[in-house]
Image 1: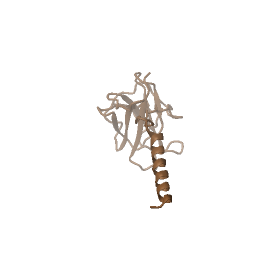
Image 2: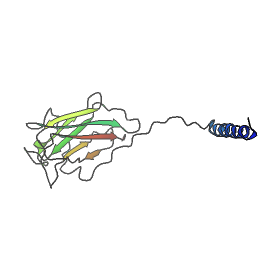
Image 3: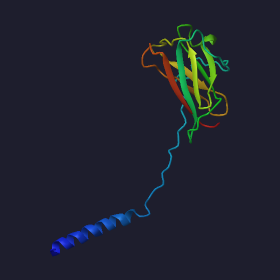
Image 4: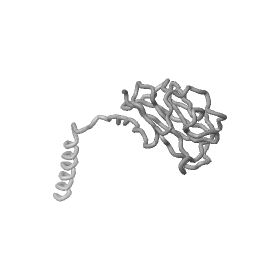
Length: 162
């Protein structure tokens, strides 16, 4: 073997050793990202009626409002949380008391409530949802549907303790 080959091999070996040594003790433990709380949306509280009753369905149904509720930070699902839902539908305006209802999340933090078809109000088909029970900070959401003939709308809450 020539002197050049031996020198090149030593340089490569030393280089790899130097790079490896630079990373020894430089490991960073894996960290879970914390889940940030949901901010209230502009217009979310429009026509809100405090204390809407818990119902099994709003009106004649045919449209599904679904979503989840989790705790900020660790993202744990929150069972038994009250979510109020209202909208401008084929059966009433969003300010009408009969267009409002509330439901509770299940053990996995999921909610689901059937209601009449949402129709556009002010040019947009949208729903309103509120978490307002007091254990966590109040959040109002106003999600907009992709198409006015969609048969469901989904919204997710990440709640910060009050």
